[in-house]
Amino acid sequence: SRRDRMTVGFHPTLWYNDAGGITLGVRSRGDYLGRFEQNVALLTFGTEASAPDFFWRIKNPVFLRAPNTSQTLELFVAEGRIGGLLDIERRRRHLGRGALWSHGLTLQWVHPDDFRFLDPLYYDDAGTVELGMTTGVNGRSGAWRLGLHSSVGGGLVYNRGGLDATGRADLDPFYFRGTIEGTARKALARRLDFGMRVFAGVAGGEHDAVKQRQIYFQGADPLQQLGNPLLRS
Image 1 (cartoon, helix red, strand yellow):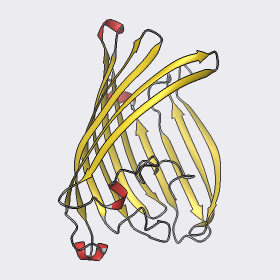
Image 2 (cartoon, rainbow, N blue to C red):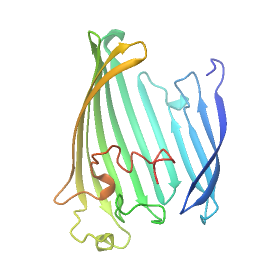
Image 3 (tube, rainbow, N blue to C red):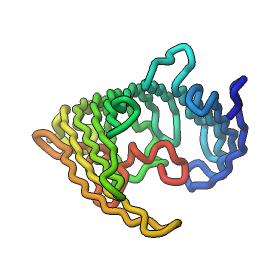
Image 4 (cartoon, rainbow, N blue to C red):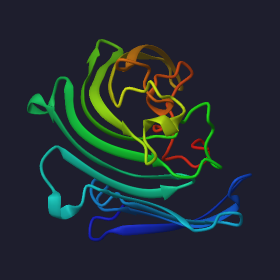
């Protein structure tokens, strides 16, 4: 970070999977004052892919600056998925002290396009458009760092060939998704923390939600993994 101008870093990328083959690319990351223009661009070429992929994120542009407010726009064509995300989040702490509150609104679209890259255990052949709201609070109680976060949203499922083409003729085109998470952390030593986490979530409608929007016991769902090329496939 610099105080007088924006910084941009460029990094080569390299990975392999059996659908795209050896994948080469370049990634850029920007920063201004550690707060604005936190942009990311990634362009990749797979030796077995028919076209290049890209991921583009604009976060906190200077021309949209506002106190305690963060904005994010993402567009991508990434390993069998096409989509985008628009996110607005506002944080506030009363008089600079006490608990830190956050409230957010997110609109996300993800469309599976090439199932050579996708695991059918985690993806139905259907696109989703989802609108969600998030609320969170972080604070301290003695030596404990506490957090409580929740999300609620709803989405529409669609398919170019009709819902029958998903292989689930009973699929409800609308779904609901909600989660709540509580965390508690405490320092035990200089480099050792103790943490606890409680999580609950529900996703579905008249029937189970599409696989990419279900709640997974082992961790992040497929759409939460999209930003990391070492996880998303």
